[in-house]
Length: 166
Image (cartoon, rainbow, N blue to C red; front, side):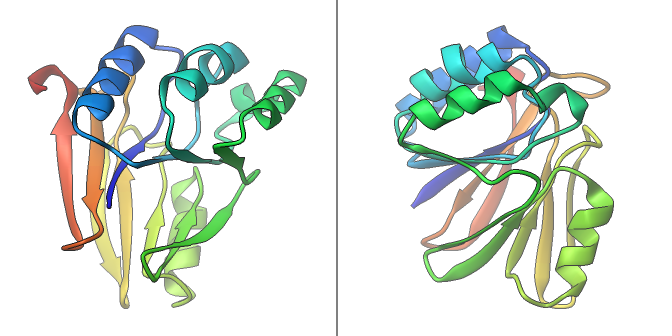
């Protein structure tokens, strides 16, 4: 299965649309979103309608916490976990949060194979015990180039993509 991981969109709809077009063309089956969408309309008018596969999503900073986020329930393919997501993909235990300190804490627990997080706007891969700790960077391109990650669960390979190069 091919899964894309994005974070820190910060309402950059041009970058989000470019990513969504790429995801459709490259048959991305699921999407993991590590928070900081910002305006609820980014989720309800662009992201959720623009991606038809399952979407796993957690809150980012304060900007994501809105009554309007309740509209996420209107999309049956979207799973909003709140502050922390836990799920399995192809037999691997996955955790999903926004902040790096919480991500490291989860990785140190040895309960997960992979922990995804965002917030820093810097792509990062680290192994803690047996757990991979992965930050896909920022899709918005704030403070660094716009990036996202792609995880092929069939061969367990993770690849970082720079948005301007796709």
